[in-house]
Length: 260
Ligand code: IPE
Ligand code: IPE
Ligand code: MG
Image (cartoon, rainbow, N blue to C red):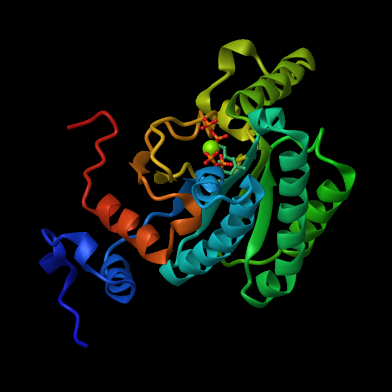
């Protein structure tokens, strides 16, 4: 099928387009470099079906896998997935331990595929407090994929935006104490370099599923000028077409960064 040029889609209702057509549309225009996703709604997805919440997390892992593939089809450079926040430790112990196991197993079993597709895997968050087996499993995949040059997946795991800033302030305080940095010279650049995301560009687009209009302690510094896109769709129901629709809407926006 011959596709119309992207211009012709300017006023098209994007909900009428299928996955393949949406992908063609978004690929015909500049795509964002970095997309961050708050993968929310697993619990509600399961509860609505009368399943235990962990059944939703199991489905959520499948969605994450599909969205990584969709991001690769898009030609994205960086995809950050919020998998476990520092506040999520307050959930029932059984849910937390199942989540840990699910994530660790999913990432470990993905390794051959990550290597085959040249995908780099990294983790942002505090390693302290993560069960040793899970931490070692993640570190192994990070190490094995460190020279891959395709899509960078950043897994926000045991991640808190305020903790990240606390850790950055500690780095800078140590540099000042050691006489390597004059307090009057501290700039945005120094703060940026002290973050977990030191060498990674800020997200262009932040997607949140399940309709909540909040950032829940995610990438507080980095999202200063990020475009936000919230969908009522629950994470287990989110698919590649939803990702492409978010990008297509992003491409229609004008980013002003405080200018005119
Ligand atoms: C997101 O789904 C997954 C994690 C936070 C780990 P939730 O578990 O938050 O699902 P809801 O928001 O309760 O529906
Ligand atoms: C945000 O979702 C964290 C993750 C998706 C990992 P939450 O479900 O924890 O956020 P709140 O509690 O609705 O703010
Ligand atoms: Mg939630």
